[in-house]
Image (cartoon, rainbow, N blue to C red; front, side, top):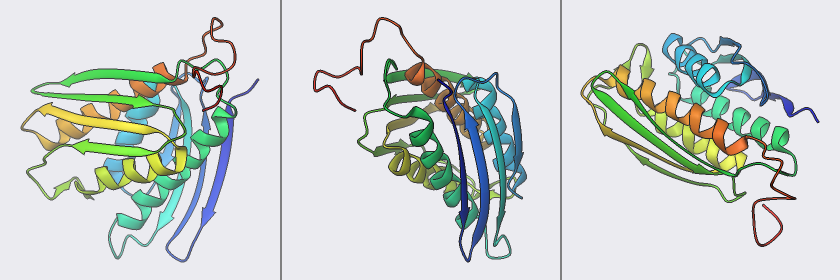
Length: 195
């Protein structure tokens, strides 16, 4: 069973083509027009061992908000499609990732019930040419479109780049753990029989 999906999303603000393979090797081909965001998505793919391709064209003359949010929407939709009936996945994943002085934690549940808890305080408006407030917007859009309960916390840190990098790495690793197949799990990991 191939756990792959391709999503195309076109609006008056963005034009996005995204594909993901949950059983990849960490290959990434990313072009969103926002260098820092490209870097973060590359880190997510590499540390989660997902094959990810993203082509996004957005109204960057306004700012990066629509592009980042719509990539989050598209990635959430792709994850939901690639997971299918969620048969035999571990469902839960947690990862702590240090990046120099910063430490971030992501804990998530591929439950079908979206929710985002985002606990991080950034001290700069931008990281590269990406607004730091868009990190939360990305994960909110992804959570609600994938049906994943995501808790993200920066435990501590002073460098905004390091904190955000630790977030994306920990998210990739936690998601990899949650979507990992376990032959001992018959059906889905739920006493209700459905996710």
